[in-house]
Amino acid sequence: QSSLQVPAFSLILLIGVSGAGKSTFARRHFLPTEVISSDHCRALITDNENDQSATGDAFELLHWLAAKRLQRRRLTVIDATNVQADARQSLIDLGQQFNCPLVAIVLDMPEQVLNDRRKTRTDRSFADPVLHRQRRDLWLWTRYLEYEGFSTVYRLKSADEVDQIQVVRQS
Ligand code: CTP
Ligand code: MG
Image (cartoon, rainbow, N blue to C red):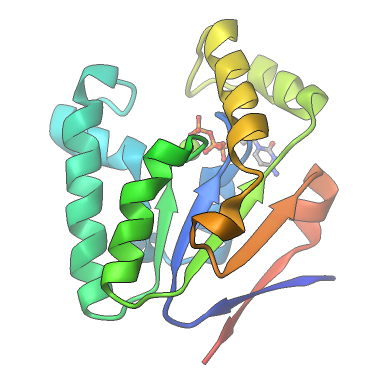
């Protein structure tokens, strides 16, 4: 069993297309209160986590919450697709503002796994072009995470690898 080492105080970005398993991963390895999810923020505002019209407000809330936690030096996990460099930049800025180590955990799942999950998924559905765009963004825009400011980058490339992983906090 391999382990992902993360500083006890860190800002962790989960990165992956819809269905990659970000929320599942977050639930398994972190306290519910440590995880800030863009979907949950949407729901807090509109009662509907799929309401895309609330995306702007949801991310404002997400950033605000993250800042309040980092100010108190609480480990914080961002559960959003985070596939585009633009989407990550403001979170990187936030981490740096609070002198907080940045960790990227990329859930880079094979297309087959994503397609299988999509067929059985009941809580959300989305069109092919959306997933296609996210996959392209992941491929194009997550190659240089170290240069963006992440001190640690983990890239998990199969469902098995994700299953085996343990998250270890370094004090
Ligand atoms: N899933 C699974 N096995 C895993 C991880 C996820 O079968 N190891 C399934 C979940 O049960 C869920 C689907 O795959 O039905 C998507 O997982 P989720 O964690 O919700 O993916 P997210 O990346 O959070 O997707 P989204 O961006 O749409 O929130
Ligand atoms: Mg999710």
